[in-house]
Image 1 (cartoon, rainbow, N blue to C red):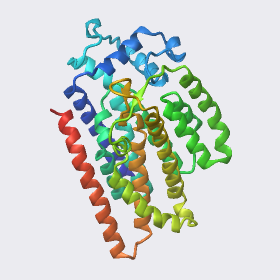
Image 2 (image 1 turned 135 degrees about the horizontal axis):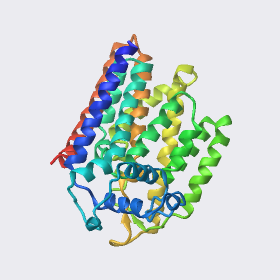
Image 3 (image 1 turned 180 degrees about the horizontal axis):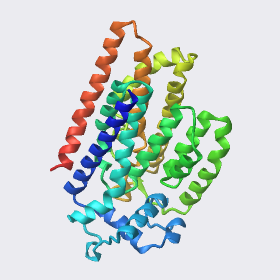
Image 4 (image 1 turned 45 degrees about the horizontal axis):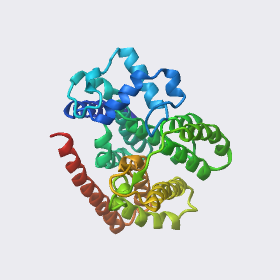
Length: 355
């Protein structure tokens, strides 16, 4: 029952916190994390809110949140760590990564809770398994950068999208976290249309104002470029999604499938964003070691999307074939294959994180 789901959810949340803090302690602080923290310590709240952060992402939500946390705990980085790599300090690793660990743990827990409540406990377990077999979740679970916060807000947006709703608060949070949050907000509003177009206007405009004054850098595209996308939305999930989408589209008039159709449309539009960016920088043709290399983490919003849309579409097709044992057998094989491949990729990532 619902009481059992709530108990399991609470247990899962604290388990995720334990895993996150373990990752935080096992991995040395990277230069990017230290650089961000020095920016936070040096700047005032007003300067952060004005977008004067000396990073490619000058959107203020993560940095303001971190500064509030550090002012409350009175934590400060050692000045001697500036521009250094792989700093091991238990207190710094804990306090700097507290917010990302909390955010990532809540995001994972929300995915389980949503599917367990709206479908059944086994749907929740499968959704949890998909989340935990996503390597990007593990890599950025405990990193003192905006990714954990971005994961959480993206999960909230997607779960609201399934319900056919959006929140202006979520729009603002996304548009204050990353430039891609503006794209996520616009895509969601355009798909839901009508009453959601105007509420997204103010957050999107504010996000664009931050983007306009952000520092500009050259980027080069790694080879193969498609791994920038499949690193977040694995190929096996794309294949399973396409197979299930055929059935969803064929039955799109069924109101029970409306949420899946909406999320499929959102997924298709979301893929346009990284494809456009990759194509743009390929045309720029930055040579040698000039600029920075595009990283899969810039498209990490595709990771929660890959989990939630794959689970939603799969469970819709599963429930639509209650009397077809052969179809259900194929569906079970499909999700088992996706989880097995995801587990292999995640194990490789976890080995590097837990050495």
